[in-house]
Structure formats: C-alpha cells, structure tokens
Amino acid sequence: MIRHIKIELPAKGRGFHLITNYIMENLKDLPSSGILNLFLQHTSAALTINENADPDVRDDLAAFFDRQCPDGTPYFIHTMEGDDDMPAHVKSSVLGVTLTIPIQNGRMAMGIWQGIYLCEFRDVPQHRKLLATLYY
Image 1: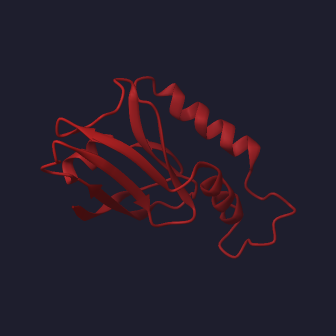
Image 2: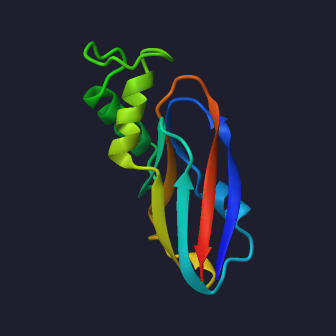
C-alpha cells in the first residue's frame, strides 16, 4: 500500500532548521512497519538527518556550507534571483532533497540523537512543500 501526504513547511530564512516534530505532527497514524520517503519539492533547499541535541551543530553546518559555496561566487552565471541563487542550488544538490526512513512500531526508526533538518539556503524566508510517501 502507498499513501501520499503533502506537508507545507513554515517559512524559514537561511539556516538548518529542525523539523522532526513538525513532520511527526503531520504524519498521523503511521503504519506499524514500512518505509517513509520525504521529498522536498524545491531546488534551493535540502533535507538531511543529523544531531538534534546541540544547536551548535546547526551553526557549524551552516558555516561549513556557506564557506564551501559562498554567496556572490564570481564564476556563477545563474544569478537571476540574487547572489544566493546559484549557491543555494549547489548546496541543495550536494545534500539532496530526499530522505528514506524506516517505520517500526508506528514510529520513525531514527536514532535518539537524530533529527530531520530543513536546510534553507536562501536569505528570504519561503514556505517549502514536502511530499511524504508511506510504503506499507
């Protein structure tokens, strides 16, 4: 069986934002077992799973990606929407827009220190659309 759930994420500015609880609130009645696929329907943001306890992790991830691919990189041609446009696309491609998470006992089978992050690479806050697909 396959079920799709559309989730609109709250608008967030640049940064790594924990969205685990928001996703759980929008995924009621998970099956006892299965697979959850999360697909972010955007090209300038990403999804990742990382430590959910220490807020320094979020800042360090942002600092790393901003240093590796800074806004205003002079050799980028695609700058139609500003200096953060193409760097956002590159960062999205590096991290990716999908996550696959096992479902066990009606819950996402994530480690105790794992959280799901929306990685927002644009300065202007935007609502992001997420398609959750349950396979069970």
